[in-house]
Image 1 (cartoon, rainbow, N blue to C red):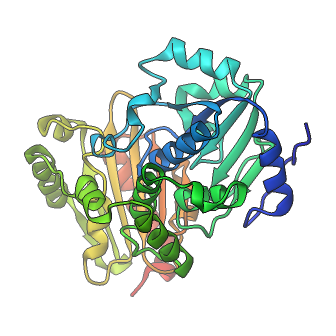
Image 2 (image 1 turned 90 degrees about the vertical axis):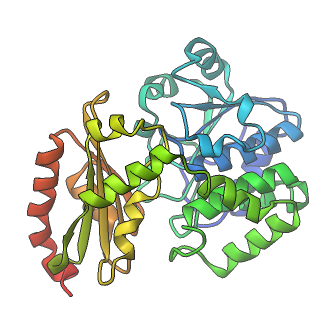
Length: 349
């Protein structure tokens, strides 16, 4: 079987398309994997690809490294997803017998948590579809484009190139729309292009009910989540001299408000709603993992990707990134403040 080895392309070219078509021209056992703590783009892209492969007669399954937020569990096909943490034996068997493993919305196997060693030992051929910077070289077929709004937009391109957009069903359209909507901040981030809007328009025409999707994802708060948001905003620290705002949430504060996975989604963006603020961060304590989870956002040219890579063992995009710290919450916040002076020229008003 001819494979295109270790190539990165901004758009799918002829050789990539032909390599994928050859892979899918015969029955395969396929596993589809998103990153740990999957978000809307990760779940939307994997589900859309799963529907596409199933409709082409391929035996496929999605395995998530861990659970994902309730506000994403309405998407068509969610009931078929395997959770590696909860369904460990079944998930391991699927990985061992897989002939192809698609990895979506991440580009380094370190992003899958406890699944990493099992993927590294797998005999399957890997196909990567991702839009983050600095991809590693574990995949034989790589469709990587840092300029894309989302992995869901890339899956749309993938389907268009391999089979044609007429094969996108209403279920697939809903999944893809969700991922594009969430990863573009409801189409306001810089990565949103004219092409993105044309893709979204086609998805609506194909059955994605945009108003209902927005409501299901953004307008389904619980009293506990709103009170947690109030706590987060009360904890916000504003450093006007660096045009920076950051939030801290301790494990005790999360427990007090009955924290559920996904409850802090979007909290970091509130800092950027302040006049003059271009850099926003949230630090969330996770005692179970022994780390502080960090989300970073920016407006304009300040690269939170570089900041996260340099100081917090993370990365992502220029305006949206994540990281982690093994210091205490207080020590992490203090260390963050000490770093700001090094970026004074980039952050000063």
